[in-house]
Length: 480
Image 1: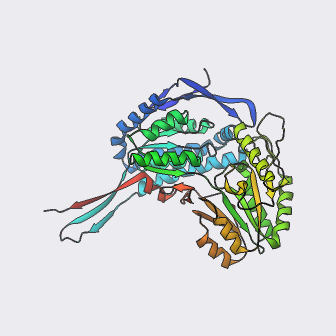
Image 2: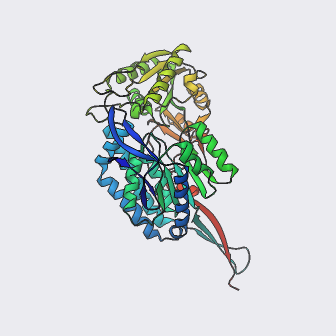
Image 3: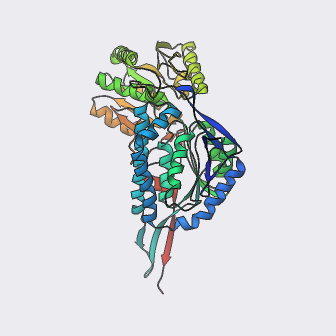
């Protein structure tokens, strides 16, 4: 097949037993390509290649690692529009969003190129005379990386780049829905000076590729981003064989709007984080807690804002919100909108399927009011352009309801009160807190992660990534 995109194993491009089409959610007649599907045997071959390459790469110089990662970052930057267009075609983000994510991925690679030069340890004095103590950071070994479909290049970047920067070897499984950007990263890496086997791409089903990575005793650490159910199974499996594991899972992120909030700031922050990128972000604001004094004006202003937004083909100029990623996700979104209404919520805007020039998975953003925090729509992650409003008396009630969830990824507050802002930063039960900003949107050089059921293990991104991708060794020396 002329447009087959192969797996990359031990420095070679390898066909799979079958291929899977990569479908454009803005236009289901547009097949981006056919991508090879690895099975368990091919995954094991990739793991073996990574294990064989580990000794050499683990003791490579910081300059070697810098050169590889900086080259990747530079090429992604140079091809930002091309790769951003590919991202928008396969995932459904608007072109500006696709290009923005591509730029972020490039900067992540360049950041970790510099981190490769900065990795250090400590030299301490021993309590025993004449003895010195060195605390060393060393790579973990073969690392399995499993990425989700909603950020096809940024999340792979923030897993691959630190893994390589700190001297690990990689077996990377992208999401089945969006293999295009992952393949592009692999193709760029294949043209660097990276030794064969250090990086391996295995596209395929979780039941084959994912299971092989999770169960292999040769995989010393596994980083996963995806659903709560899958994440919990992976955590249990890795713990059983004492492998290092990092999991980023779900969110049911609250944003609180207080009476003293700047209405324009509150509306823009909420609409951006709840509905842009089609709401398909684990950091999206899906629960909006609004105090009584501003509630009606806020809802009216949000509805007015939503009426101005254009839902259309991701690559079309002027599109604000692209399609949902596939039919399964669209059906799930519609089901939650229906459940919310049956439980007493009022559909204040949207939530319906819309038709456009091309056949795709288009849904107007849904705003549901008159909801409570014990309703299904407030408890379960929808992962689409669906948000619900809960009326509250005051800040204290809002904070209590905001924290009343099994998740704890991101939380927001819109207020002009420094008192409430300071209190919220300390008492919001979330790994990331935003004041007068969207709950979605984190810089590439700072830690990313949550609390409670949202995250497990060390943080991703920034210098904190070293906690997962390295292990600490304590070495004593007595010169004799």
